[in-house]
Structure formats: structure tokens, C-alpha cells
Image 1 (cartoon, rainbow, N blue to C red):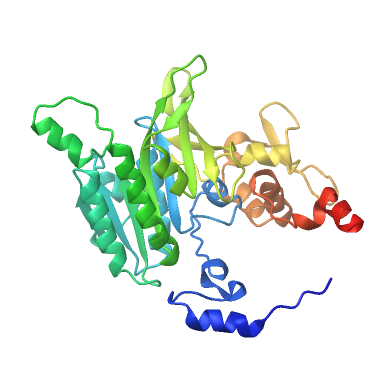
Image 2 (tube, helix red, strand yellow; image 1 turned 90 degrees about the vertical axis):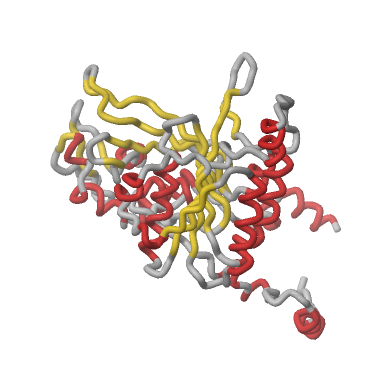
Length: 358
């Protein structure tokens, strides 16, 4: 059935609106000009967007986990990627933990002359300052914000109670956190600003305890992406060489929830750029194991198996980089991790039957 709509009414609505950023949806910059910031680590891009060549998007992204789980490092990786894409970009770093040494910034090669470090003592202080900052920022100015961390911030009432010698539990903190994110979330979207938040997790009490993100429902509802980090030691015999992290996708607008993304970090060498790719190449039959401890590429057209190499040789640019531009492999990743968007109405047999009966 052909549908007609009143363009003059649409024009009238657009003319009369008091919201300056109102636009026809097909031309709205909030939908047609989404900024994507790729990182140097392909599987981090997959975690952020469901795509090898995707990355960080504007809005609230949260890295959560127990202590010493690389949360700040992942946040600084986001900041470094953003600042590399935009040479005029600055980092607004809110610090409530004071546990991030200068060496962290140096490790990620972040220009500290482009970082405004802002120490915090309570949530209300953060709320006031970040709103002041966001009010003054215009869309098109390149700013990334890192908050390390929301989990360590007390409320003003909690501080006042301590000064007065009171030891009662503070019931206002969760409300303050919820209020904070409710106020700033629209600004992040409208002004195209990524906010990366570090948070803590705690174990739920019960027979099968699971990790719960701190801060109440406020941060959960407002976040575009929430990742809970898990960790295992990477050992060579009894020697610990580093850690194997699992990025657990708790919430995402782009990636299937409960997806698990592996990332390896060595004490010598840092993040392995090609973490997690080999297992996916094996799963998709892009690579095979002709013998135990050996790997070989598979020609997708002929099925021919290439030369055998050891694991260490697979973790090189020569072996991996061709796969990062391989359209078949990129599509395999999207199918495995990405959220599919299709025609909901046209593929619903119940709706189709009702339409025919009518």
C-alpha cells in the first residue's frame, strides 16, 4: 500500500522547533555522521563495535573489573587512539584513585601537554565540573574524557558523615551516580564526545556468585558499552610471563551480549596486537592445524593448505595483516559478534498472515 505524508507539515515542525539540532532523520548528523575511533588492537575493535575495522564511538563506555585487571590501561588505549586520529584532540582525565603513574601515559605515548588532569574527592564535585566543561564544548571540538574511577568516588554526604564521626551507610550515593550520568549522557551524544569510565566489580552473594558492576543502575542504564574484565596468568612453567584477559561484553549497542573477547598482555612487549585472532581463523577455516603445534593458511578458493609455521610465527604482521583486510574474514567476524539489523516487520510470518487476513 502506497503511503503519502504531508511534507508541508514536516517543514512546519522543523521551522517551529526550538531545538537547534532538530533535522530530518535521513539527514540527521547524529545518525549519519557517527564518529568511529579504531584502536591498534583488532579484537578490541571487535569488542567495541563488532567489526575488525570498527572502534570506539561517542557516548559512555565502561571498563569494569577487580583490582589490577588492566582497566586503566584499556581506557588509556582508547584515549591514545582518539588523540592519534585527531592531532588537535585533548584528554580530560578525571582522577579519583591517584594510582595512575606517569609511566602509564608514557607507555601509551600520550602527549601529557594535551592532558588536563583533574583530581576528585566526591561525586558532586565531578558532577559540577563535568557539566561546566560539557556546556562550553561545541560539536566538532575534539575531546575525550576518562574517569578513573567512578567506583572509588564517595558522595559528599559520605564525607560529611565521616567528619562528624557517623558510621551510617550512605543511601544517597547511588542516586548521585544516577543523576550524574542522566545529566551528561545527552551532551556526549549531541557533541560527539566519548567518555571512558573505569569501574569496580563485586561478587553477588549466592550459590553461584557473579560479577556485579558497582554504582547502581545509573551507570548501567546510561552506558552504551559495559565490559567486565576477567584474567588468567600466562605462565611458562612456573614463571608468569603476563596475563590472558577476557573482555566479557555485559552490555553493548553493537556487539552480542555475553560475547567473550580474548586479549593477551605480556610483561615484556605489552598488548599482543593479534590476540584472539588465531582461534577465530581456525574456527572459520581460514587457518588449519596440519599437525600438533603447527599452523597453515587455507586458500579460500582452492582449499589448498600453505606452508606450516609455529605459533610464534602466526603472531606477526606478515602472517596476520592480510586477514585484517580479507573481506570474507571480516564478514565472519561481523556474523559471529555483531548485532544484526534487518527488516523486522517484513520477516515476521505472524504479521504477514494478519495483513493477508485483513
